Length: 437
Image (cartoon, rainbow, N blue to C red; front, top):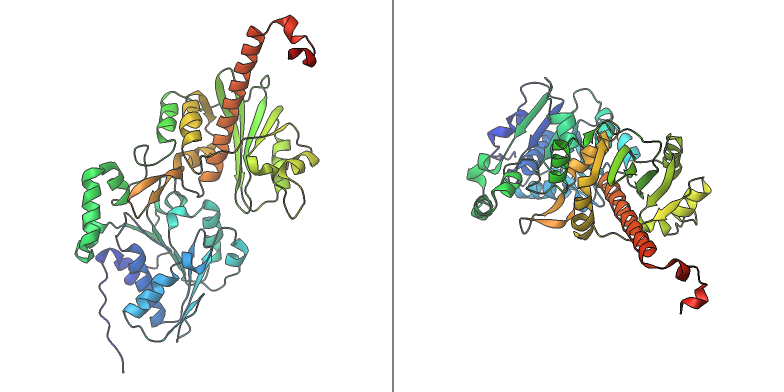
């Protein structure tokens, strides 16, 4: 005996429920509590019950099945009493052969590439998906008639999903903004209360959290104001290499993650960022080759404090690996706390930014990361945390902060030397160490 289930689907999702044409990309973005994930998940279940489909549900990082939409889909199956589904720990299957698969893309590209016959790719939390992951997914989902569904709450205007998929939609791309006010009749009173409270108390954050506006310098970007000021003052543009000045590198070493490198020079009181490189999935030797093949006269290479840790695989530290491969003049920076707190950002990075010049072309990727670098948002308490989010923008931004810390410490060292030469008599400094006490 068949069972009739009445589903309430907001009008904004009609093109997914009953598409007017064969879309390749369908995207839903906007503020929180707008029903994007729930509605998309529900419609995917319905489609999978109508005919056999292979649906890939993915996100940038999935350390466990708990990070996926597996639970959301399972809960919807139970809520609407959809029969015929088999829910296991890692997959969800329907009696007609439909299958839902769950994967994280980052550091899992080979597994994703080998996933054949995908009909629909549902990308959840797409604001965090990296450009590298997008470049892996699009050619992987190649079955005739296959399509993507992207869902996201925007972070910045530099989100790769916005730049690559949504900002310039073509005739096979459908993008729809959906906010909580569009599904007002479906919202519980508790959600409405929190929304209106933030609208009244913090309108700037309200625009981001509830209306889906990108973060600005007012609402959560780490260097938004500093970059805007640098643009006004003309400090972002052409910054040529000065062969008479030393060149430094600041490197964020990714362990199973992206590695980012900034090349910079200290010219008088100014810090000139002349080049940038970032990649992932490469051996450390690849980055050393990039450094050695640049036509720069190197002074010092700055590495993060954990570069002294010995690795189990090689038995060497990162410092030793660099030196064994011809990269010398290495300085390991003190432990930083910008991932955990504000001291290095507020006391060094932001003040030093007024001295920063950045080459717009050679540092294009680095600039995108700096513009997008933002603080974590505490969903429970509806406020920004005091530590930056770890996502695609954080690797280059971390290396940039390392460079500013290195520049600050270099300045402090010069000041100490000046004081020493000024106040310590020559004849006293010439005495042997034994005579100092």
